[in-house]
Length: 269
Image (tube, rainbow, N blue to C red):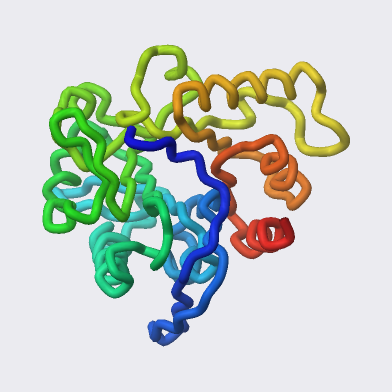
């Protein structure tokens, strides 16, 4: 990758979006390490995260009859909740307004993570076709060379591990797991490592993390950074003290179900 994507926070110009959809521009901090987990559950998917100036959002996708729908579970699918309508078109419009970036003056891409809820190999060609009209907005790999764009799109869940890595030209990347470390997978294929906190650690955030678990966490972070990647733990305790702990330990992406809670933690740093 041209430069390492390790991100904390910086100054940028951001957009507040009112409930009526009117944009109000203000100056403020962009929280590059803030990750809106299950973003589509918000009252205003995408826009709530943008109003807090978070730089990372997650959308769960289902491939149903050739269309990509946003939902956590299949029974939650609604005809109007498509990936294009909820994320691609709004982000494209915002980037056009803001001079080529989601946040004007931002010095790095906006992270858009897709959790593939159905077969990733079947979903991937549909996703590629869907994003083709927007492809100039995305980070890409062209003949093996990474090129930065306004959005970094990467796939989690049922990842298309057979087809995507073989492509010399693409606009999509893969989310990694701890088990993917030390396998010579380059950062321009897998820029982020995301894993289930509860699988690796038993500490619930009360008192002090046991030394053995703390050393394990630090070892995983060190190895992730040696490979030029970012680390995110999902399924971690959703408390202010735990989020402060992750920040102090240098974890790169901090997930949030409660956007206000994370914002209060980050804005106090």
